[in-house]
Amino acid sequence: MQKASISLLLLCASAFAQKPADLIVSAGTVVTMDASGRVIQNGAVAVSGGSIIAVGTKAEIDKTYKAKARIDRPDAIVLPGLINAHTHAPMSLLRGLADDVNLGDWLRSYIFPAEAKNVNPEFVRWGARLGILEMLLGGTTTYTDMYYFEDDIAEVTKQAGMRGVLGQTIIGFPAPDYKTPEAALAATETFILKWKNDPLITPAVAPHAVYTNSVETLKAASALADKHGVPLLIHVSETQAEDAQVFDKHQRSPTRLLAENNAIAKRSVFAHGIWIKPEDRPLLVEHNVGVVHCPGSNTKLGSGILATAEFLKLGVRLGLGPDGPAGSNNDFSMFEEMDLAAKLAKATTSDLTAVSARTVLEMATIGGARALKMDHLIGSLEAGKRADLITVSTLAPHAVPAHDPYSMLVYSLKATDVQDVVIDGRTIVRDRRPLTLDPAAILKKARELRAVIDASIKAK
Image 1: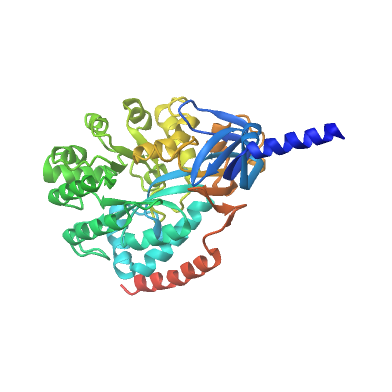
Image 2: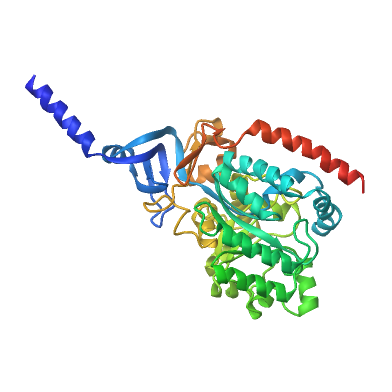
């Protein structure tokens, strides 16, 4: 009886000594993506106040912490949430509108006219909801957007509990929201001031491209981004035709033109970058530019293939993104982008070691965070960082046997294997069930808007 009492006392003392946590997520494997490349078998992550407070073995975490809630996935991998470093979320409503045409025709004959007739605050809200729903179910916890009415996109992103780097588009012709670059720049500053201290929303300045803006507008956009310390998002050297157009007008490549005109902001992120010349690539390192590889978009549009291995050797901050889901890509799957990025690098160099699975997973996590200058906050599972993480099931036939987690995540596992999504310490998806969005309502509205879009195109 005395021994039993002593054991009970010791048990009570042990429980009392445990530190409180809001959430513990455990799994068969934890892939941290930290600097040491730690992979923990039977691991766990402890979360409190939206931040990661500890990462270790499940036994260690359970001994030290007692959580209000738990997610235990012995047949899954826990890893940092995926970072989509370039997309146009509301274009989910234009998915499949015009495929298999070249980029110039796609923009001028289909997308720009469809946007002119249909894009309004309601369109972007429902399109963003549809895109966010797909991204969350596919394990994306941060997305980087460039579109119109970005304040409305920020509102629905915040409501969904997702992390967004959201860029208000500035373009040199009348857009659905603002009719001049000057008006767009003024609205962008208002947008920045509204959102710049939000825990989930990072506002950004988004001049569409060099060829769609004047040098004066590009300089003003860069100055605005630096004034407020926010990212600048821009398409650069996506096609040869774009580069030729810029060179004919300015006798400079897009990258050199931006550099020589003080139009590269301190947090600049270049989308695509396929045709950035070797002699211009050192400028990317010099100016700390993030570059986003969009392999699905680049191959579908026939734009070209980024020399990924060469950019990485130079030390360029490389992220990964699917681009928009209309024409340039038809979904938001970061798993597809990882798989394709690794395979394209091998196919174009005939070197199977050119870009490894681990390197590509870095591009989709900590690398994307570095490109956005947010790696102090997100991109890896480390104490002190925001608690953005996902669980990915390893129970499906294509996930068995699981010899190497990096290989599994890049070459075998799919967006549909994602089970749980936690953003800023809050569980947003549990067992593939969205907790902050109404899928039925979103899909119903998307189908209704499709009929409106189709009718507007037929009416031209």
